Length: 299
Image 1 (cartoon, rainbow, N blue to C red):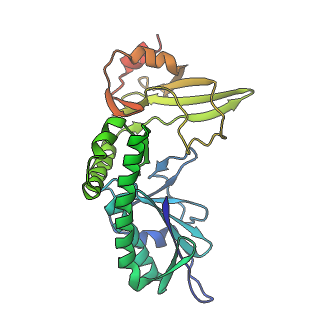
Image 2: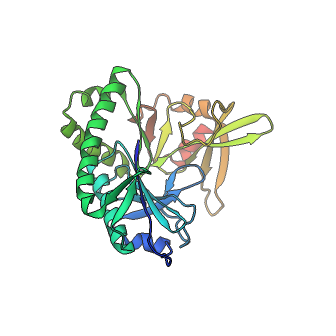
């Protein structure tokens, strides 16, 4: 579910919308990024002021929830907020909408493709969405728990596969308490500087290759089993890799980085006795993979 807002400029002489325009409408501490070719959010590649066709993601570094998306349709400005989310994300989203309406001197905006909302009613809309979000989150947690399903949350930094044990605890909470717990959980999970090992996919002749990458000394979130991430993989539905590899990146002294490959199952076999810390239902945390450790993987 998502809340979609579109701000349509009035008159013949509409203002162009650039990256600089967007930045001026956000709080000073907010960080802008975009989706990369692997459907992950990145926050250090925005250089061109032209944002046509770019889905910008907004991150509040003081509160790492799900963030929200900004994009343009010609000279119209659009914003999208995924639900369920956190109260802080809702506040940040509507703060941006308020400032954008003021900037473009409009007195209304379109919500969910059909509803015209007056700017004067924006606060009541924020409260309505916040209430709906709390109820939706609570109902979703209970439904997933009852049906023994995973809760996959696409956070602002990385996906999180919330385990059944957590859902069981959450299902007992009041809706208001659950929002606070959910917000804290997302922030804690995404606060540490960890590299999320999301696979990249390639085709060679009849083979489909899925490849993870592990880099020397980089604390990494590693998959317990190789799998195709839902929604964001870019693969056609029903297509599965028949080869899974791990690329191992090392930095020899005074030389260019080297990369060697091993089957992903070989990697899992070699780390099975390490008693790694669990990140979520589908991942562990592998800390500081040293050069010696990586070399042992290649033996």
